[in-house]
Image (cartoon, rainbow, N blue to C red; front, side, top):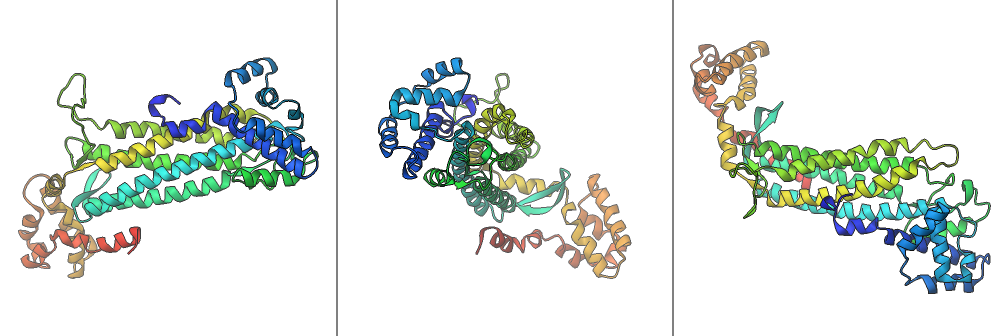
Length: 434
């Protein structure tokens, strides 16, 4: 992941130094369990911790060894032996490389999940605050990009809050599914290592045990994890696209915060572009792009192959780092979003009352007019309003076929904007609670 779209705390999870530290902890905890079972001397397990607990693992040295042995775990174990000394021969007893690699990946994904959940909480807090702020700010709802009926800007944001509450639940479920430990040895039979070692390591590393591993943790777990991230990214893009539309000059109901000294264009000094939400759209595409290779990783050969390995070296860091950055950026956009209720009212009025057409339609049917005839009467006046021949209310009031069923006073009642907002409080209670 390029530094431009990476935050230090998330990046640290995927650093070589952190990876080797996790590898050491897995090996050291396994040694403790082996010592407790009498498989290795207790003094050896103690020495591993004594020498390795505060050690600084030399990434360059490990890389140099790997260039010779062509195996990353062996390279690490060789370096660990240089640090620990003769007792290192008791490390990795009965284990296979995947026990270390897969359990480490689980730890990293679980820790990354905790950050993503915290990021989502930030976004939820911003959405809730702004939704309450604009709870009753009237704006036009659009379908197919065309004015439909009135809503409120608060309801728009409440809808996104509900969506990201679901996103949070998905992230929690994804974390629960991925946070598993496998220390089962070659082909997963525990032939050379006691299952109690796995249970001990799992507890110490904050994981559950994988009920059955085939030398590797089954990759359907990882596929579900990255799919969850892809759905969260899709929700981010929906939020970003909404803001981008609202910032269009012709709409301009809301826009990203434009800071003092910021410049929007190298050529046109007047420009204030929605660069942050455009960036979010691009980042969301990247996160979703990692879902397909994660799905394709599920079908490994027999008990194990490493076709998944190179994929996960990319998508593990890149997906989590990118989504972390995007969620935090989205929270900032919402927190500082500039909102223009006056412009929303202008846009509501732009179509001369057409947004009340359904209510007139329903009133005509309730007054005894067939639905087909009522639709025809309202539509013929609505089309005239579209063409600039007057407001819908005036045109309806001048249509004798309409006023036979609905007198002027009743027609005027049907154009009350507040009618559309009578259930806003109830909806907010559904979303945010009492």
